[in-house]
Image 1 (tube, rainbow, N blue to C red):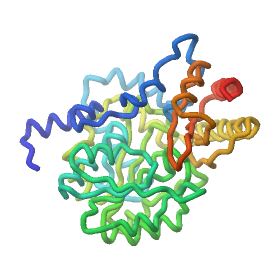
Image 2 (cartoon, rainbow, N blue to C red):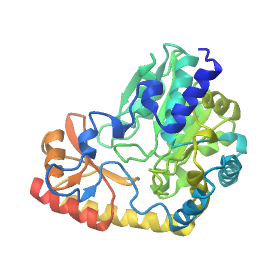
Image 3 (tube, rainbow, N blue to C red):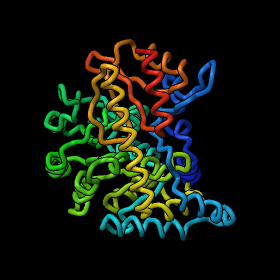
Image 4 (cartoon, rainbow, N blue to C red):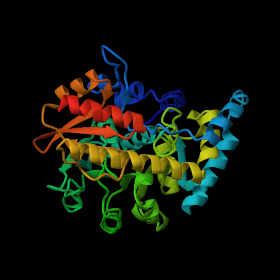
Length: 380
C-alpha cells in the first residue's frame, strides 16, 4: 500500500497523539463502548477504587515528577536529543544496538503499527494468538482485512497452548502474537518452553511478544525473549512504562527488534515525533530508578497477597498472577457483578471464557484493596 507524504505524516501524527480510532478504526480499551461502564463514576457516591485499568497507583517516581516540572520549561524545544539518550539507555540495558529500539507514546501505538505493517505486507493473511489475551494488535489488524486465529488457553492452567499455536502456522500466517505474562489471566509462560517455541517459530514466521507486565514476574530477564532478538531471530518485544513505572497517563513505550523490521513498522507509527519533552525526560529519570522500582514492586506484591487472602476468605478461587492484576471466576453474570461492585464505588473488569464469567481486579493501594474487600462482601 502506497502512502503519499501528507498521508504518511497524518498517520504518524495520529499515532503520536494516540488517536488510534481515526487511523485504524480501533478504539483503545478506555474508549471502547463495551468497556466504558468500568470507567464511569458510580451514579451515587464516590469512586473509592479504580481497579479496572491495571494502573500503578505509586508512579510516576519522585525523580520523574521532579524532572517533569523542569522539562516543562523546555516545552518549546523538540525533544530529539533526549529521545536519543533514552534509546541509548534502553539499548545498553538490554544489550542491543540503538537501531534495535523504537520509541513510541505507549506500547499500544506500537501494537497498532505492527498490526498495520503485517496486515498490508501480507493482504488476507492471519494472525495467531491465544484466546483470551490482550486484543489490541489483532483487533486493529482485523479492521484492515486480516484474519484472526484464536487458540484457546490450556485447560485448567489457562496458559498459552504453544503446541497448538505452532500447529496452526501455515503459509497464510503473517504474525504470531504472544502476551507474556498474559492479560487478562495473569499467567506467565514457562521461559524454557517459550524460548524454544520462539526459536522454532521465528525461523518460519515473525513472532511478537508483548511483555507489558514482565517486571512483575519473579525474574524479568529470565522470562523475557529479548535474548532471541540478540541471536538475530525474527522477533519483536514490546515494553511499556505504563505499569511498573506508573506512567500510563504520560504514554511511553518501546519495541525491541531487528533494525530493518523496526524501520518498516515505524512507517505506521512510533518514533520520537509523537513524544513530549516531559514524557521522555520522565522516562530517562525513572528507567534505572531501582529504588522506586523495588518500592513499586513490593507494594504491588503486598496488595496481591492481600487480594489472594480476600478472595480465599470469601470462598473464591483465583489464577496465580505474574502481573499487577488477578483474575478469578465469579458466581453471577459479568455485567451484573461489575455493576454491583460499581454501586459500592469499586470499578473492575469482566470476561467470559471456558463457559465461565471472570472478574479481573487491578492491584491498587491498600485502602483501595480494602474498598474492594468491603464491596466483595456485600456483592457476594
